[in-house]
Length: 225
Image 1 (spheres, rainbow, N blue to C red):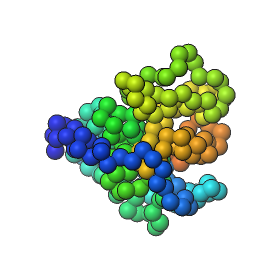
Image 2 (cartoon, rainbow, N blue to C red):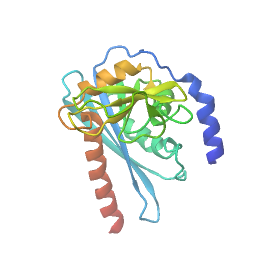
Image 3 (cartoon, one colour):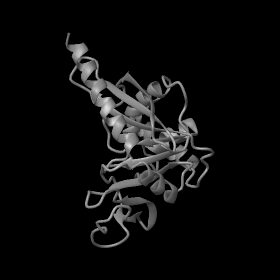
Image 4 (cartoon, helix red, strand yellow):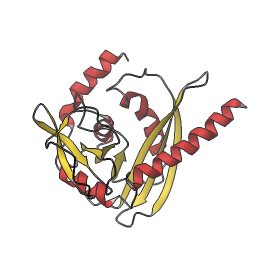
């Protein structure tokens, strides 16, 4: 599809995003992350999904998959590059997740349909956007967040609350949390903090990042042979 068609899809399906809690029992929580292998004749997206027990946060399994890149890099449309590989990785899990943490935006998106919302609506699974950088919006309060872990302020766009700026570790740079699907912002913040075990980035996406980096390195090495 073209970027224009992709934007139309976002506008069409954003009405399906649920910003209230509809989670059901939480037993398994996943983190998903994607890396790109572009220095080859066949560019690929490489995804990793790591599954944890909840609330123990014990790692249950990790699945990786790669998918040919068929969509160009366009800011605001990254989910169209990433989701095919994430779906392939999810299909390799022995058990489905009850909630997915995505390394990216959810509702905090120009068309309110970032990766976490796109994936959540597509699978009808609760999802949370947990991004390391801000795509749009401004903090609701002036000045720096308090240094303590757990401090947060709403992220606003044209007066609408689209997410939260959250400090997960004392003195660390904040993360940008937003609803993906079937999770309220308040619950998304609470679950993010529950998934933080010391480092700035919560365990599910941090572990997925490490897993996908290993998978990308192995795939790159295999392609060079």
